[in-house]
Length: 73
Image (cartoon, rainbow, N blue to C red):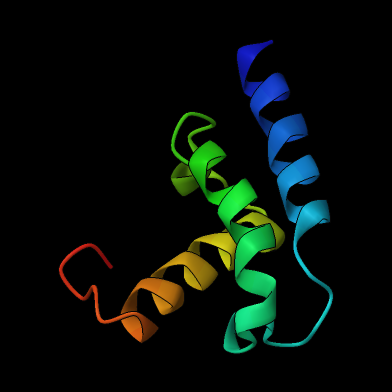
């Protein structure tokens, strides 16, 4: 039941991702991402196999790298 609830959260988070091909390259999308990222850890997104959720994790790493926060990325 908990796993199912996590996947529902993952789908909601993925649905909130901006629609562009590579939205993380557009700084105008960063505020929207900032509302998504705090939920990735508590929802255990890193263990999700769904490509849309994995894409959010990749977006997060790319954002941190672009901001020069290589250590956190």
